[in-house]
Image (cartoon, rainbow, N blue to C red; front, side, top):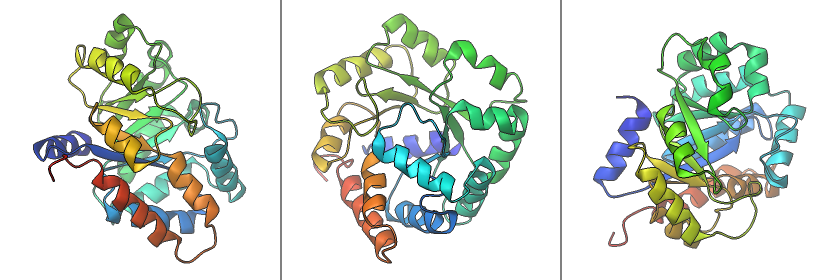
Length: 268
């Protein structure tokens, strides 16, 4: 049983939902980023999505775009991200997902990435711009399936395509809550619930929902519909607003603790 499966099984036993946190690796630099992420993991994050900084993050809103720009300016590349994962593994055993666009992995080499990501301690990879029809170029170079390949569905994904996506996914399904980019406002809860129900009819994998979720109230509402809630822009906004302040790790830890409480069962 890998760390992703074990985590969701453990949470289900407690009737909790996963708090999945996204941060861009190397923002504002690798040393500070490692401190910030470590504080978040210690504070109760269930799953970490570690973003590989990229020059053209087309799925991301302005907040995460700026975080990528800061990390790139600090010289952070995929090899540095894997080094951060190795360092984090000495501090935490929560699942770590490499969140990336395909170009950095293509440049690194598919087989080398699989080997080095596993050796560093990564549990999975999520590629926002590689649909199932185009992923064989990547996965054909992998000797095994130990590195989970997280797949995405969206509000426009029809049930028959959900089935196809789910059949080649592992770890969990990331359902994009709405059309647009990360950090945008408004949550169509009725539509999210309908799509999650459709997904449950075609997969037994956990389902996590992300994009545009930031407040405790939104987390509580979405957590009632799925197995995990993904928060990204809210964390990066906090980082951006407090860069250089010594209390930033504590601020992030406190935010994680507040948000994690909303994933507990209502009676707790």
